[in-house]
Structures are given as structure tokens and as C-alpha cells.
Length: 186
Image (cartoon, rainbow, N blue to C red; front, side):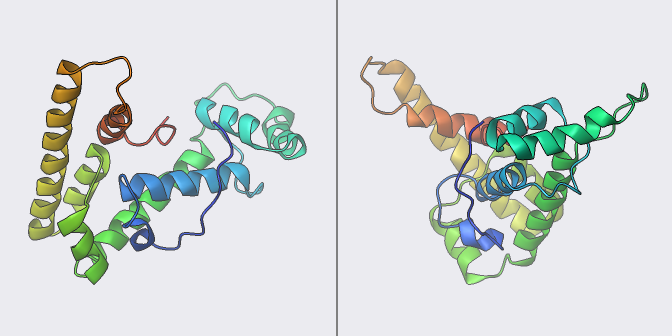
């Protein structure tokens, strides 16, 4: 994990014009902000992924402060609590799913759905669970269109393999579609 430039997104609608799954992009930015500018009072418990991420992205003094809290506490043999960053990420993901579903009639959403819609499987499924039947059908169509396009492109890539092939970005798109953006889900 490395430090990223943090964008000040306030709405899922702000990322609809960018490439890839808008939820992955929004959440990756949100996670980077949590990792690079953590609110020390909110972070007490960390999973392995986020512990290593903080070690990699924080200034040494900031990381030391974050790591001192759990080190100074006496170890508890009971089940460890959930990672605070994972919990905050889940809350934000749920908020953005609700925001998108509530904005389904917005001009930007309609334009995005017609022109460049791309959703990973995970966010497509979450949207369908929370949407009206009509929006769920549209989300299903988008997800299926993305899947079909990737199958077609990957089939072509695998049959036309050349060492200097310039389409290796396609593999990243396929990975995002299947498993969300790298580093988003531990």
C-alpha cells in the first residue's frame, strides 16, 4: 500500500464520470483518507491489512501514536474486536449505496447508466438489494453488460497473446469487476 492523493468527494455522484466502479473509487479514496489522515481517537482496533497499510502510509510519528494504544493495553484472550477502519468503510459504503439509490432519478445517474456504467459484482449486488425493482433490473443489465464485454475482451486477449500486447489493463478491469479494486477489501 502506498500514499495516494486524497480527493474531497462528498457524493457518489462526483465520481460517476471517472473510470471503473464508482463505489470502488469513492471507497478507495475514503479508505486512503482514513489511512493517511486517521483520526486517532476513532482508531483503536486494526485488522492485519489496515495495520500494515498504516505502517506503509503514515509518517513514523503518526504510526507510532496509532500503534502505541493497542500495545499499551493488556492483551485480551477473547475474540478481538472488529477493525475500526473496516467498520468505518462499511458504514460509508452503506451510506453511498443509499445515496445512489435515492438519486436514481438524477440526471447524472441516468446519463452514467446510459453511457459508461461499470460496476463491480459486489457493488452491483448491493445496489440491487437496496433498489426498487426497476432500478435493480437496470443494475442487473449493467452488470451483465460489463461481464459480457469482459468475457469477449478476455477471450480475444487469450487467443491473440503476444508478448508486447498493450492491453494488459484489461486484466485489471477484470480483477476489479470480480473482486472490487485492489486493496479495498481485505
